Length: 440
Image (tube, rainbow, N blue to C red):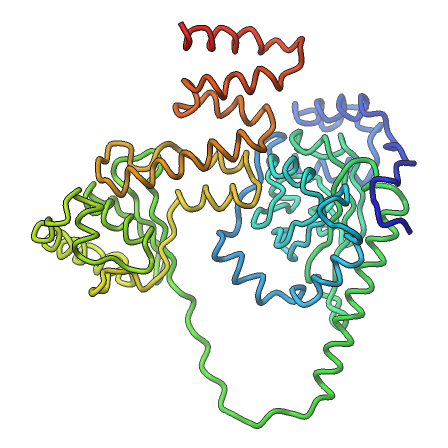
Protein backbone atom coordinates (compact mmCIF):
# COMPACT_ATOMS: atom_id res chain seq x y z
CA UNK A 1 0.00 0.00 0.00
CA UNK A 2 1.25 3.49 -0.81
CA UNK A 3 2.75 5.48 2.02
CA UNK A 4 0.78 8.57 0.98
CA UNK A 5 -2.86 8.85 2.00
CA UNK A 6 -3.37 11.65 -0.53
CA UNK A 7 -3.06 9.23 -3.45
CA UNK A 8 -6.24 7.32 -2.51
CA UNK A 9 -9.15 9.46 -3.74
CA UNK A 10 -11.29 6.89 -5.52
CA UNK A 11 -14.42 6.93 -3.36
CA UNK A 12 -17.11 9.64 -3.14
CA UNK A 13 -19.57 10.00 -0.23
CA UNK A 14 -22.40 7.54 -0.64
CA UNK A 15 -25.09 10.19 -0.25
CA UNK A 16 -25.48 13.57 -1.91
CA UNK A 17 -24.12 16.34 0.32
CA UNK A 18 -27.12 18.52 -0.40
CA UNK A 19 -29.64 15.86 0.65
CA UNK A 20 -27.69 15.17 3.85
CA UNK A 21 -27.47 18.87 4.71
CA UNK A 22 -31.24 19.32 4.22
CA UNK A 23 -31.96 16.30 6.41
CA UNK A 24 -29.61 17.64 9.07
CA UNK A 25 -31.34 21.03 9.02
CA UNK A 26 -34.72 19.37 9.56
CA UNK A 27 -33.47 17.30 12.48
CA UNK A 28 -31.78 20.14 14.37
CA UNK A 29 -34.86 22.30 13.71
CA UNK A 30 -36.84 19.78 15.76
CA UNK A 31 -38.29 17.54 13.05
CA UNK A 32 -36.81 14.10 13.81
CA UNK A 33 -39.56 12.34 11.78
CA UNK A 34 -38.98 14.33 8.59
CA UNK A 35 -38.92 11.91 5.59
CA UNK A 36 -35.73 13.53 4.29
CA UNK A 37 -33.88 11.73 7.04
CA UNK A 38 -34.39 8.55 5.02
CA UNK A 39 -31.78 9.93 2.60
CA UNK A 40 -29.18 9.48 5.35
CA UNK A 41 -27.43 6.19 6.13
CA UNK A 42 -29.12 4.37 9.06
CA UNK A 43 -25.91 4.38 11.11
CA UNK A 44 -25.61 8.16 10.75
CA UNK A 45 -29.34 8.80 11.12
CA UNK A 46 -29.49 6.95 14.44
CA UNK A 47 -26.37 8.72 15.67
CA UNK A 48 -27.94 12.07 14.77
CA UNK A 49 -31.05 11.14 16.72
CA UNK A 50 -28.98 10.16 19.76
CA UNK A 51 -27.12 13.45 19.49
CA UNK A 52 -30.37 15.42 19.17
CA UNK A 53 -31.92 13.58 22.13
CA UNK A 54 -28.80 14.36 24.21
CA UNK A 55 -29.16 18.09 23.38
CA UNK A 56 -25.81 18.21 21.63
CA UNK A 57 -25.34 21.52 19.83
CA UNK A 58 -25.14 21.47 16.03
CA UNK A 59 -22.43 24.11 16.24
CA UNK A 60 -19.81 24.82 18.84
CA UNK A 61 -16.49 23.56 20.08
CA UNK A 62 -15.74 20.32 21.93
CA UNK A 63 -15.15 20.68 25.66
CA UNK A 64 -11.56 20.68 26.85
CA UNK A 65 -11.52 17.67 29.16
CA UNK A 66 -7.84 17.63 30.16
CA UNK A 67 -5.50 20.46 31.01
CA UNK A 68 -1.92 20.34 29.76
CA UNK A 69 -0.67 18.88 33.05
CA UNK A 70 -3.49 16.33 33.26
CA UNK A 71 -2.93 15.32 29.64
CA UNK A 72 0.79 14.74 30.15
CA UNK A 73 0.24 12.59 33.23
CA UNK A 74 -2.64 10.63 31.71
CA UNK A 75 -0.75 9.87 28.51
CA UNK A 76 2.20 8.59 30.52
CA UNK A 77 0.07 5.96 32.26
CA UNK A 78 -2.44 5.06 29.51
CA UNK A 79 -2.25 1.47 28.16
CA UNK A 80 -1.88 2.73 24.57
CA UNK A 81 1.17 4.86 25.35
CA UNK A 82 3.51 1.91 24.77
CA UNK A 83 2.17 1.25 21.26
CA UNK A 84 2.24 4.81 19.91
CA UNK A 85 5.37 4.12 17.85
CA UNK A 86 3.48 1.22 16.28
CA UNK A 87 0.51 3.50 15.51
CA UNK A 88 2.81 5.97 13.80
CA UNK A 89 4.57 3.25 11.82
CA UNK A 90 1.31 1.73 10.58
CA UNK A 91 -0.75 4.86 9.87
CA UNK A 92 1.82 7.62 9.33
CA UNK A 93 4.56 6.00 7.23
CA UNK A 94 7.12 8.11 5.40
CA UNK A 95 7.17 11.74 6.49
CA UNK A 96 4.28 12.05 9.01
CA UNK A 97 4.13 15.85 8.75
CA UNK A 98 3.28 15.55 5.04
CA UNK A 99 0.96 12.53 5.17
CA UNK A 100 -2.20 14.39 4.14
CA UNK A 101 -4.15 13.11 7.16
CA UNK A 102 -4.26 13.45 10.91
CA UNK A 103 -4.15 10.38 13.14
CA UNK A 104 -5.71 10.66 16.61
CA UNK A 105 -5.68 8.21 19.50
CA UNK A 106 -8.24 8.66 22.25
CA UNK A 107 -9.33 6.91 25.42
CA UNK A 108 -12.50 4.92 26.04
CA UNK A 109 -14.37 8.09 27.01
CA UNK A 110 -13.58 9.81 23.71
CA UNK A 111 -10.92 12.18 25.03
CA UNK A 112 -8.16 12.66 22.47
CA UNK A 113 -4.71 11.90 23.88
CA UNK A 114 -2.50 12.09 20.81
CA UNK A 115 -3.16 14.01 17.56
CA UNK A 116 -0.37 13.74 14.99
CA UNK A 117 0.16 13.86 11.25
CA UNK A 118 0.09 16.38 8.43
CA UNK A 119 1.08 19.83 9.68
CA UNK A 120 -1.28 21.75 7.41
CA UNK A 121 -4.25 19.49 8.13
CA UNK A 122 -3.56 19.70 11.88
CA UNK A 123 -3.57 23.49 11.74
CA UNK A 124 -6.98 23.40 10.02
CA UNK A 125 -8.58 20.71 12.17
CA UNK A 126 -7.24 22.44 15.26
CA UNK A 127 -9.64 25.29 14.50
CA UNK A 128 -12.57 22.97 15.19
CA UNK A 129 -10.98 21.75 18.43
CA UNK A 130 -9.60 18.46 17.11
CA UNK A 131 -6.62 18.52 19.45
CA UNK A 132 -5.26 16.48 22.33
CA UNK A 133 -7.19 17.00 25.54
CA UNK A 134 -10.62 17.66 24.01
CA UNK A 135 -13.66 15.40 24.32
CA UNK A 136 -14.89 13.91 21.02
CA UNK A 137 -17.42 11.48 22.43
CA UNK A 138 -20.81 11.36 20.75
CA UNK A 139 -22.36 12.95 23.82
CA UNK A 140 -20.01 15.94 23.52
CA UNK A 141 -19.88 16.72 19.79
CA UNK A 142 -22.45 14.42 18.23
CA UNK A 143 -21.77 12.18 15.24
CA UNK A 144 -18.08 11.77 14.45
CA UNK A 145 -15.99 8.73 13.66
CA UNK A 146 -14.20 8.46 17.04
CA UNK A 147 -17.29 9.17 19.14
CA UNK A 148 -19.67 7.01 17.14
CA UNK A 149 -17.14 4.16 16.90
CA UNK A 150 -16.98 4.14 20.69
CA UNK A 151 -20.77 4.37 21.01
CA UNK A 152 -21.30 1.38 18.68
CA UNK A 153 -18.08 -0.49 19.56
CA UNK A 154 -17.28 -1.00 15.89
CA UNK A 155 -15.37 0.49 12.99
CA UNK A 156 -17.08 3.61 11.61
CA UNK A 157 -16.60 5.98 8.67
CA UNK A 158 -18.22 9.42 8.65
CA UNK A 159 -18.25 11.42 5.42
CA UNK A 160 -18.24 15.23 5.48
CA UNK A 161 -21.82 16.42 5.93
CA UNK A 162 -22.71 13.33 7.96
CA UNK A 163 -21.08 14.95 10.99
CA UNK A 164 -23.62 16.33 13.43
CA UNK A 165 -21.53 19.41 14.24
CA UNK A 166 -21.40 21.83 11.30
CA UNK A 167 -17.85 22.89 12.16
CA UNK A 168 -16.68 19.33 11.45
CA UNK A 169 -18.50 18.88 8.14
CA UNK A 170 -15.54 19.89 5.92
CA UNK A 171 -13.75 16.73 7.09
CA UNK A 172 -14.14 12.98 6.78
CA UNK A 173 -12.85 10.31 9.13
CA UNK A 174 -12.46 6.62 9.87
CA UNK A 175 -12.20 5.27 13.42
CA UNK A 176 -12.07 1.94 15.19
CA UNK A 177 -12.08 1.00 18.90
CA UNK A 178 -9.07 -0.74 20.43
CA UNK A 179 -9.85 -3.47 22.97
CA UNK A 180 -8.04 -5.14 25.80
CA UNK A 181 -6.88 -8.38 24.14
CA UNK A 182 -8.10 -10.53 27.04
CA UNK A 183 -11.12 -8.85 28.61
CA UNK A 184 -12.30 -7.15 25.36
CA UNK A 185 -12.91 -3.99 27.34
CA UNK A 186 -12.52 -0.87 25.18
CA UNK A 187 -9.17 0.80 25.86
CA UNK A 188 -9.49 3.62 23.37
CA UNK A 189 -10.03 4.58 19.76
CA UNK A 190 -7.88 5.23 16.69
CA UNK A 191 -9.07 7.79 14.16
CA UNK A 192 -7.82 8.98 10.77
CA UNK A 193 -9.15 12.39 9.67
CA UNK A 194 -8.68 14.18 6.35
CA UNK A 195 -10.41 14.58 3.01
CA UNK A 196 -12.12 11.86 0.99
CA UNK A 197 -8.91 9.81 1.17
CA UNK A 198 -9.66 9.18 4.86
CA UNK A 199 -12.93 7.32 4.11
CA UNK A 200 -12.03 4.95 1.31
CA UNK A 201 -12.53 1.18 1.75
CA UNK A 202 -8.73 0.88 1.80
CA UNK A 203 -8.55 3.38 4.65
CA UNK A 204 -11.04 1.37 6.70
CA UNK A 205 -9.14 -1.86 6.07
CA UNK A 206 -5.89 -0.20 7.10
CA UNK A 207 -7.27 1.32 10.32
CA UNK A 208 -9.00 -1.94 11.26
CA UNK A 209 -5.80 -3.89 10.64
CA UNK A 210 -3.80 -1.39 12.70
CA UNK A 211 -6.17 -1.83 15.65
CA UNK A 212 -5.93 -5.62 15.49
CA UNK A 213 -2.12 -5.45 15.25
CA UNK A 214 -2.02 -3.17 18.29
CA UNK A 215 -4.23 -5.53 20.30
CA UNK A 216 -1.88 -8.36 19.35
CA UNK A 217 1.14 -6.38 20.46
CA UNK A 218 -0.51 -5.59 23.78
CA UNK A 219 -1.17 -9.30 24.33
CA UNK A 220 2.40 -10.32 23.44
CA UNK A 221 3.82 -7.69 25.80
CA UNK A 222 1.55 -8.91 28.58
CA UNK A 223 2.49 -12.57 28.08
CA UNK A 224 6.18 -11.72 28.09
CA UNK A 225 5.77 -9.86 31.36
CA UNK A 226 4.06 -12.87 32.92
CA UNK A 227 6.82 -15.19 31.76
CA UNK A 228 9.57 -13.04 33.25
CA UNK A 229 10.99 -14.05 36.65
CA UNK A 230 9.00 -12.43 39.46
CA UNK A 231 10.74 -9.47 41.10
CA UNK A 232 11.82 -9.66 44.72
CA UNK A 233 8.87 -9.34 47.05
CA UNK A 234 8.51 -5.94 48.56
CA UNK A 235 5.82 -4.06 50.37
CA UNK A 236 3.45 -2.19 48.12
CA UNK A 237 3.29 1.48 49.06
CA UNK A 238 -0.14 2.76 50.00
CA UNK A 239 -2.06 4.40 47.20
CA UNK A 240 -1.74 8.15 47.39
CA UNK A 241 -4.87 10.20 47.63
CA UNK A 242 -5.86 12.17 44.56
CA UNK A 243 -4.02 15.50 44.66
CA UNK A 244 -6.02 18.65 45.21
CA UNK A 245 -6.29 20.78 42.10
CA UNK A 246 -6.55 24.52 41.88
CA UNK A 247 -7.17 27.03 39.09
CA UNK A 248 -6.73 30.79 39.20
CA UNK A 249 -9.07 32.60 36.81
CA UNK A 250 -7.70 36.00 35.84
CA UNK A 251 -8.87 36.57 32.26
CA UNK A 252 -11.25 39.48 31.83
CA UNK A 253 -11.76 40.01 35.56
CA UNK A 254 -10.28 42.39 38.12
CA UNK A 255 -11.04 40.16 41.10
CA UNK A 256 -9.55 36.77 40.34
CA UNK A 257 -11.43 33.61 41.25
CA UNK A 258 -9.54 30.79 42.94
CA UNK A 259 -11.16 27.40 42.35
CA UNK A 260 -9.84 24.57 44.49
CA UNK A 261 -10.77 20.89 44.74
CA UNK A 262 -9.67 18.68 47.61
CA UNK A 263 -12.10 17.48 50.23
CA UNK A 264 -14.66 19.58 48.36
CA UNK A 265 -15.03 22.28 45.73
CA UNK A 266 -14.39 25.84 46.85
CA UNK A 267 -14.45 29.09 44.91
CA UNK A 268 -13.28 32.35 46.43
CA UNK A 269 -12.87 35.84 45.04
CA UNK A 270 -9.44 37.29 45.82
CA UNK A 271 -8.63 40.91 46.41
CA UNK A 272 -6.79 42.66 43.59
CA UNK A 273 -3.48 42.56 45.46
CA UNK A 274 -3.80 38.93 46.50
CA UNK A 275 -4.62 38.03 42.90
CA UNK A 276 -1.48 39.80 41.69
CA UNK A 277 0.75 38.03 44.21
CA UNK A 278 -0.69 34.59 43.58
CA UNK A 279 -0.53 35.08 39.82
CA UNK A 280 3.15 36.04 40.00
CA UNK A 281 3.92 32.95 42.09
CA UNK A 282 2.02 30.77 39.59
CA UNK A 283 3.94 32.30 36.68
CA UNK A 284 7.36 31.95 38.36
CA UNK A 285 7.36 28.37 39.63
CA UNK A 286 11.09 28.48 40.38
CA UNK A 287 10.38 30.98 43.17
CA UNK A 288 11.00 34.67 43.76
CA UNK A 289 12.97 36.61 46.30
CA UNK A 290 11.05 39.09 48.41
CA UNK A 291 12.70 41.95 46.52
CA UNK A 292 11.82 40.54 43.09
CA UNK A 293 8.24 39.68 44.06
CA UNK A 294 7.83 43.19 45.45
CA UNK A 295 9.14 44.64 42.22
CA UNK A 296 6.72 42.58 40.11
CA UNK A 297 3.74 43.52 42.28
CA UNK A 298 4.50 47.06 43.44
CA UNK A 299 7.01 48.23 40.87
CA UNK A 300 9.82 48.87 43.33
CA UNK A 301 12.35 46.42 44.81
CA UNK A 302 12.36 48.25 48.15
CA UNK A 303 8.70 47.46 48.81
CA UNK A 304 9.44 44.38 50.92
CA UNK A 305 7.99 45.93 54.05
CA UNK A 306 4.71 46.48 52.21
CA UNK A 307 4.72 43.03 50.62
CA UNK A 308 5.26 40.94 53.76
CA UNK A 309 2.09 41.94 55.67
CA UNK A 310 0.09 41.37 52.47
CA UNK A 311 1.57 37.88 52.22
CA UNK A 312 0.54 37.19 55.81
CA UNK A 313 -3.03 38.13 54.96
CA UNK A 314 -2.94 36.01 51.77
CA UNK A 315 -1.67 33.01 53.75
CA UNK A 316 -4.62 33.30 56.14
CA UNK A 317 -7.04 33.33 53.22
CA UNK A 318 -5.39 30.28 51.64
CA UNK A 319 -5.20 28.33 54.91
CA UNK A 320 -8.99 28.40 55.04
CA UNK A 321 -9.75 27.63 51.40
CA UNK A 322 -6.71 26.08 49.67
CA UNK A 323 -4.05 25.17 52.25
CA UNK A 324 -1.92 23.38 49.65
CA UNK A 325 -1.27 26.77 48.03
CA UNK A 326 0.12 28.54 51.08
CA UNK A 327 3.43 29.93 49.73
CA UNK A 328 6.75 28.67 51.05
CA UNK A 329 9.50 31.18 51.84
CA UNK A 330 13.11 31.78 50.85
CA UNK A 331 12.35 32.05 48.03
CA UNK A 332 8.62 32.67 47.93
CA UNK A 333 7.15 29.85 45.86
CA UNK A 334 4.21 27.51 45.43
CA UNK A 335 4.79 23.86 46.33
CA UNK A 336 1.55 22.61 44.72
CA UNK A 337 0.29 22.97 41.16
CA UNK A 338 -1.74 26.07 40.43
CA UNK A 339 -3.03 26.41 36.90
CA UNK A 340 -4.30 29.67 35.47
CA UNK A 341 -6.81 30.22 32.70
CA UNK A 342 -4.19 32.41 31.00
CA UNK A 343 -1.76 29.49 30.85
CA UNK A 344 -4.60 27.30 29.59
CA UNK A 345 -5.11 29.60 26.58
CA UNK A 346 -1.41 29.44 25.72
CA UNK A 347 -1.49 25.64 26.07
CA UNK A 348 -4.40 25.43 23.62
CA UNK A 349 -2.50 27.58 21.15
CA UNK A 350 0.48 25.23 21.45
CA UNK A 351 -1.84 22.31 20.58
CA UNK A 352 -3.15 24.16 17.52
CA UNK A 353 -6.64 24.66 18.95
CA UNK A 354 -7.01 28.25 17.77
CA UNK A 355 -10.79 28.48 17.89
CA UNK A 356 -10.91 26.79 21.30
CA UNK A 357 -8.19 29.11 22.61
CA UNK A 358 -10.08 32.15 21.38
CA UNK A 359 -13.27 30.91 23.05
CA UNK A 360 -11.33 30.39 26.31
CA UNK A 361 -9.83 33.89 26.14
CA UNK A 362 -12.30 35.87 28.25
CA UNK A 363 -10.30 39.10 28.06
CA UNK A 364 -7.04 40.58 29.25
CA UNK A 365 -5.23 39.32 32.35
CA UNK A 366 -6.49 41.34 35.37
CA UNK A 367 -7.26 44.29 33.05
CA UNK A 368 -7.22 47.00 35.73
CA UNK A 369 -3.97 45.88 37.36
CA UNK A 370 -0.90 48.13 37.00
CA UNK A 371 1.48 45.68 38.66
CA UNK A 372 4.50 45.44 36.32
CA UNK A 373 4.55 41.63 36.42
CA UNK A 374 0.86 41.44 35.55
CA UNK A 375 1.24 43.96 32.73
CA UNK A 376 4.07 41.90 31.27
CA UNK A 377 2.08 38.64 31.50
CA UNK A 378 -0.99 40.35 30.05
CA UNK A 379 0.98 41.44 27.01
CA UNK A 380 2.65 38.04 26.66
CA UNK A 381 -0.69 36.23 26.51
CA UNK A 382 -2.25 38.81 24.21
CA UNK A 383 0.73 38.70 21.84
CA UNK A 384 0.84 34.89 21.84
CA UNK A 385 -2.85 34.74 20.93
CA UNK A 386 -2.59 37.37 18.19
CA UNK A 387 0.54 35.93 16.57
CA UNK A 388 -0.73 32.34 16.64
CA UNK A 389 -4.05 33.32 15.09
CA UNK A 390 -2.54 35.51 12.40
CA UNK A 391 0.00 32.84 11.48
CA UNK A 392 -2.24 29.77 11.33
CA UNK A 393 -5.93 30.38 12.04
CA UNK A 394 -8.71 30.23 9.46
CA UNK A 395 -10.43 33.41 8.30
CA UNK A 396 -13.55 32.56 10.37
CA UNK A 397 -11.46 32.45 13.55
CA UNK A 398 -9.67 35.67 12.61
CA UNK A 399 -12.98 37.42 12.02
CA UNK A 400 -14.18 36.26 15.43
CA UNK A 401 -10.99 37.64 16.97
CA UNK A 402 -11.53 40.92 15.12
CA UNK A 403 -14.84 41.26 16.99
CA UNK A 404 -13.13 41.12 20.40
CA UNK A 405 -11.82 44.12 22.31
CA UNK A 406 -8.24 43.10 21.51
CA UNK A 407 -8.82 42.76 17.77
CA UNK A 408 -11.33 45.51 17.08
CA UNK A 409 -8.74 48.26 16.39
CA UNK A 410 -6.09 46.06 14.77
CA UNK A 411 -5.81 47.35 11.20
CA UNK A 412 -3.19 44.74 10.27
CA UNK A 413 -5.52 41.97 11.40
CA UNK A 414 -8.43 43.43 9.46
CA UNK A 415 -6.34 43.69 6.29
CA UNK A 416 -5.28 40.07 6.70
CA UNK A 417 -8.95 39.02 6.98
CA UNK A 418 -9.77 41.08 3.89
CA UNK A 419 -7.04 39.34 1.91
CA UNK A 420 -8.28 35.87 2.96
CA UNK A 421 -11.95 36.42 2.10
CA UNK A 422 -13.29 35.47 -1.35
CA UNK A 423 -13.69 38.38 -3.75
CA UNK A 424 -17.51 38.26 -3.54
CA UNK A 425 -17.83 37.73 0.20
CA UNK A 426 -20.48 40.02 1.76
CA UNK A 427 -18.15 40.53 4.73
CA UNK A 428 -15.64 42.51 2.69
CA UNK A 429 -17.59 45.79 2.72
CA UNK A 430 -17.75 45.89 6.50
CA UNK A 431 -14.03 45.19 6.80
CA UNK A 432 -13.16 47.91 4.30
CA UNK A 433 -15.25 50.41 6.26
CA UNK A 434 -13.55 49.48 9.53
CA UNK A 435 -10.08 49.76 8.02
CA UNK A 436 -10.87 53.16 6.49
CA UNK A 437 -12.21 54.40 9.83
CA UNK A 438 -9.04 53.31 11.65
CA UNK A 439 -6.75 54.90 9.07
CA UNK A 440 -8.71 58.15 8.75
